[in-house]
Image (cartoon, rainbow, N blue to C red; front, side, top):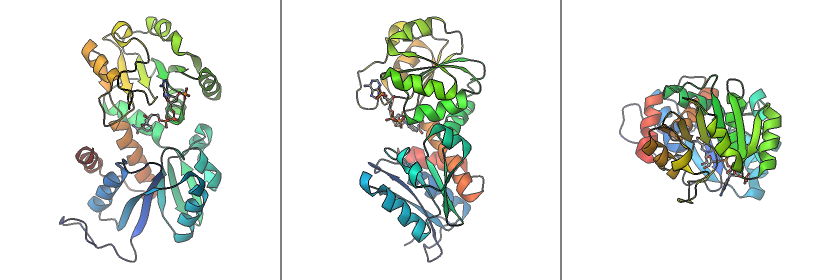
Length: 284
Ligand code: NAP
């Protein structure tokens, strides 16, 4: 099989390294496009595929990867937490987050990392958003929220709110943060100052187009920065934020930079970020 007609293309052969993503569903994933473009651009003899895995087959899949020498893989919904049980070691951040999105195979062992939080921070930095010392409202207390909180907790005054308040309480306890319920959002935002951040980490906006996490028109102020980590979709939150005059950022940068960080972990090389970005844009 030959990729396309680019100069740096090479044949897939007996030495081609295999990387992949596992999830369920996984057919929507943009990671294969992004990583294959990076491998090609750097002339690395590797290929990145996507595998849909049934929940009860996760252990078999991971053990199979180990047996056949898969070099590394990404993990997406719903396996970011459950995959931890089948890995040999976790890095410090992944252990604290309790979830893994990147696995590297080395010396017959599988090492787990979580690059989502770093991806989020790098996307803010690329947008020129100053987060240090700011008030941050994080909505949601799922896996992505935990990864983001692990980083923001070191630099910001973070309050986590969640539909299931107990999960916000538990996340806040793990990272030394404040927590509240969704009903408290108006009073939290009333105390926000210029440049403070609102981050939606829930899946609200992905399908339920009209659902609002709070009254966007009434409570958003032009001086706020609004981030919705959903990607490939202009959510109602982002549309409202833009209309009001806030700086509004979607999740594409986070997706790109979690991939950039994973690529570095696997290959030890600096990935071609613009190539990866272009691949993302052309396949989304
Ligand atoms: P998750 O662990 O399943 O967490 C989902 C969160 O959404 C929970 O806090 C849940 O609240 C909340 N939620 C769901 N439906 C809700 C509703 N109707 N009203 C209020 N809250 C609701 O999922 P995840 O892995 O954290 O992913 C969350 C989102 O982030 C997804 O849209 C995903 O695509 C996106 N994401 C983006 C990136 C990126 O690179 N840009 C990376 C990872 C994830 P409860 O606890 O009450 O159920």
